[in-house]
Image 1 (tube, rainbow, N blue to C red):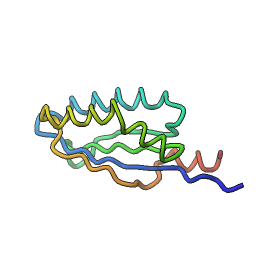
Image 2 (image 1 turned 180 degrees about the vertical axis):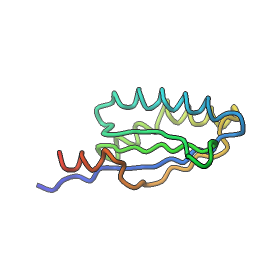
Image 3 (image 1 turned 90 degrees about the horizontal axis):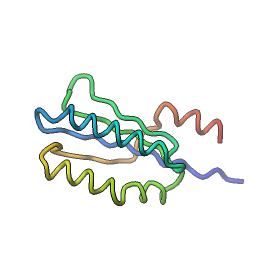
Length: 109
């Protein structure tokens, strides 16, 4: 049997000055609720050490449909609200490098 590939993505989030703490708090809530989803295999957020206005959100999903469902409502609405409320200047989501917990997931799978 062929193992289905895990879907890994990395979002780079650049905040407006003075908004990084609020975005970090919102990311913490997003990570906490996303971890409860059975299709979410791993998710983590951290602030870039040399630039406190940049956050990294790394995630791993069971398959493409799980990732697409997560990016649908309400997460897309949350990201849009951050932009519209001038919390975030830019969000770039791209296929990501495996996160630390993904290697363990592949071994366990």
